[in-house]
Length: 499
Image (cartoon, rainbow, N blue to C red; front, side):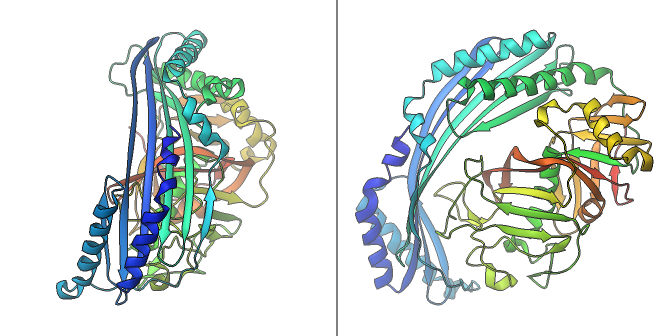
């Protein structure tokens, strides 16, 4: 799988020729070459159900004319003559924008960037044996089944080596590779064919050999056993009543809140309608949450969604979307920064060389000043241990009962109004007298109400909640989190559903 990187190394002459031609035509060129290799394995019921390997490569040209017109084109190869012709047609298409009445968009000034960032884990993809991976997944699935009998299990593995080379005609030339591996286990109740009570867990590793690492596999099996126990117990659990309640959410659900509610609303290409903007500009400085709460997005080395450089060849920098309860930064690319009145954060991401880059998140987190301790790893905290944390911090003196929402099961947000609807995986009602499991319910309301109701946080930051972010027909990896747990006081704008 190292071919993903090797494909891009011999392209210097082609990149130079395309840059020369773009300059001669009076246009700025952003050239994106990509090569991606993927390996996948699925195990179900102790047998390898599917195994596949695939690769894709090609390049895309984006041209920007002196009058602010842009055009994109792509090919699934690196043939020099075809690439030159592609560039010429893209320049002609951009210049035809005047006749078509397209509105020009001025890009901010860019600094040339040169570099090469290839994580050491990339080399391990060359020796990846999917047969060995399948046998290892069978072992992991069997161990989870021994710990929690009576559930249906499915284990999955996906290893990707995604290599990019971004060249601009101003001298920018950056090559980077993103090795990412996801291992998952999904459990469902053996007597529930609807799949309604299926519960899964997933972990990321930069090294494709992560399932063979004892520490990684041990944590995965601990999480999977807990998920399998939920799948077994949820069918007999009662429903939670509807209303506004004091809540505890874990870092995975906090990541969903940060990503869906605030992250997408902070993407500057949507500021014509975003609730965080007015007249197309970020409402910087306005209060949107509690004063001790911040939201930060930035690439994290070795992470599932790591991307050091944007698809436009701009070094990505941290974006403090909310700083101590007030809006500060937008997620911007060269074409949206000036229009929205925010600094360039290099947030342009693209699913592939065929797609137009748009502002996107990488790893987004909620930070709370003065977080209380939660010693040890996150995996040691079941509902009883969370109850003990709340009791020790005096939360039950304010609220005799607190509803603990565990896991993120997807959701959506209306970025125009700030209203969200999320799903969790399970709910426990916690009190000083014990805990009781309930079926998951809809967690909904106002994103501003949720952020202003955050009262306490427990534990260090945990930023490995995984996801896939969809926008404008493109899917890219996402991740993030928060402290282990956040406590939200009741707010009439934040509710749990019921039957």
